[in-house]
Length: 204
Image 1 (tube, rainbow, N blue to C red):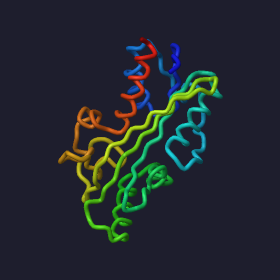
Image 2 (image 1 turned 120 degrees about the vertical axis):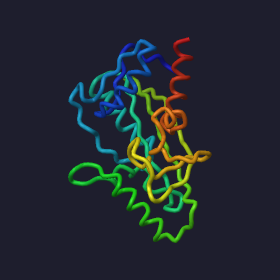
Image 3 (image 1 turned 90 degrees about the vertical axis):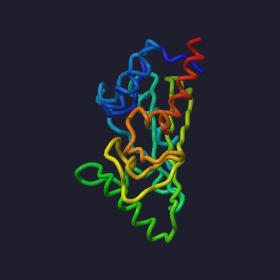
């Protein structure tokens, strides 16, 4: 895999996500910037896969700045709902006043009830990272964590579907875990570990 250089654009406006990446890349001597630093708009995500939408975000960021860029896309797939909401996970939470994941989780439970599927409701979180260079070269890293959905939801830590998702082998939902507990097994952590291992080989 190619070296990144000393500056990497994180294709997000999420300040929390930016800080997470800054901490990861600092030991490698890489400075992370964000879309907000360049007043970049959010590109329309028109693909039907996580990698497709992450690629759209990375390509737009590279084209606008000329810097290598890292973009991610993630969501939850529910087997009884034929993989939905999947790439539309955030869409299920959209309201005129921002995202409401209590609404999204309630919709998911309603659709599970309508499907007539008995528990356990198997599901997985997926995360895809696309690292792209100005010459169009890219590297893709995909992570996943398997689990089941619970109702009523449990826990107030984390975000999104975390209070509804109980990873396999654990008796707590992501919403009940500490950040450290979740990050040790999460889908994003899985993909990030793969990327950092690849970058370490490049540096070596």
